[in-house]
Length: 186
Image 1 (cartoon, rainbow, N blue to C red):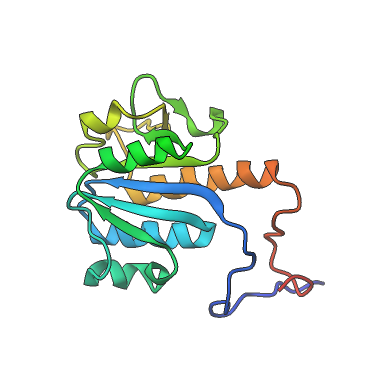
Image 2 (cartoon, helix red, strand yellow):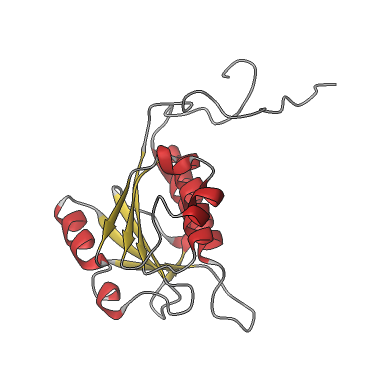
């Protein structure tokens, strides 16, 4: 019987030089723990960059660093006053802007064929995306929420949509990455 090989510790370098053509724009997030979690997701999926808008915590915030576990060292982060300037520059650079929000005109993440390069805008834990940010989004993407609450944790939401984007990008880029950890490709 084949025994699984468990990866122990971190790799010295990423598995591949490929980078997911995706940036994350964090629109006034308040929790450093959530932002640190998003850094870990971004590092694991090779996201290009994180934009920390407004009062969103960014490195070297101690609570963020504790949760990020060193991922802030390999994922570029830029602090900006608000999302407007970042989104304007990203649009000019050819990015498609996706608001991750429970908007009435949102498509579920599995129904959305993401266009790359892409920017995912994630909003405040209690208030969602700012109105000025909503106006700049090309499309809205959501997760189904069937309970009483209108949303889930922003870090959990980021994990779902970023991994779906990675899946779609890998499907469209044959041979770009073998994501299985086996003795042959370690």
